[in-house]
Image 1 (cartoon, protein in one colour):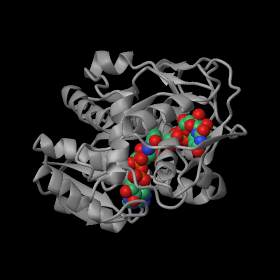
Image 2: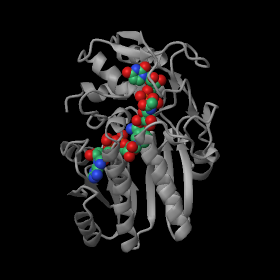
Image 3: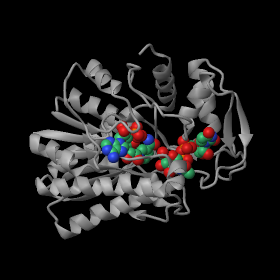
Length: 335
Ligand code: NAD
Ligand code: UD1
């Protein structure tokens, strides 16, 4: 029996596959490389010394995805495949809804056909919208999302809940990630955004690497943060990957249900704290300028990770210094 990992060549997917292979699981990866590269698969093999099956398939291609289910005994699915750039989603809402929502529907249809009803889904803290308080708890439920990317996550969560309501033999984990950064210790895999990055850490790395001359810090007059710059709950991608293992273990213990978890550390760091930590632990310069606020940004938010700790036995073990060191090591290492 195998675990199907959609989007397994991507940033979080590749780290999760490493953790799964380290635990001797049988893996089948499906990816169309829209935001990743085939070389990642070799790196995963190099890190783990293990092999796995791979299909270059777009999850929207029902026929080809059907073959994957036909040729393998898929017992559960970890579903990462999706487009994730917030700004791009505003420009291309049809592409985002089609890829993320329709892609998930195709996957769920085939899962039902092959009686495979165990799925772990990559959601995001963005589904909370703005609950008016910085510490996010699962029971807040979904709020108003501010961009098509966030809406796709919210809609897919709703679809999964409706699916369970219609057939309560489904066994579903929805993981709401906060801000994953860092990379595998080997320096072989990490986040490789194509083109101009959107998120803070990829931007810092381009500046540190002198590919960009400075970082724009979006606002330094926010209330409720230590220094006025935006504060977020950054977690190490390897901790996040392990969160998926724990979620799958939870589903294996349960008969069925919909289980929702925040995956974050419970602590927020400001943009300036991240810059200073990155500079100090890596001994590099990161020039920055204070710029206007970015539209849609909140001042501060972080996870209440109590539920994941209690029900999954999951806590983050890697701190902010390790996150900054491992991110830079990935860029600097001879791959
Ligand atoms: P990523 O872009 O690195 O990985 C996604 C992978 O899915 C890529 O390899 C891409 O090629 C593949 N993919 C996309 N559409 C596909 C399709 N139609 N068919 C087959 N493969 C397809 O992104 P990531 O950071 O690893 O994120 C993984 C998941 O987690 C995404 O669903 C993302 O929305 C979600 N998420 C990410 C973050 C974050 O900060 N990175 C935060 C919250 C949620
Ligand atoms: C963003 C998305 C969110 C998505 C998440 C992960 C927005 C409004 N939110 O979250 O929906 O789930 O990425 O993909 O886009 N910052 C700078 N300069 C930069 C980049 C970022 O100062 O060049 C600041 C931001 O203002 C923020 C912090 O750094 O305070 C983190 O930003 P980012 O990494 O983009 O993540 P989020 O905004 O939390």
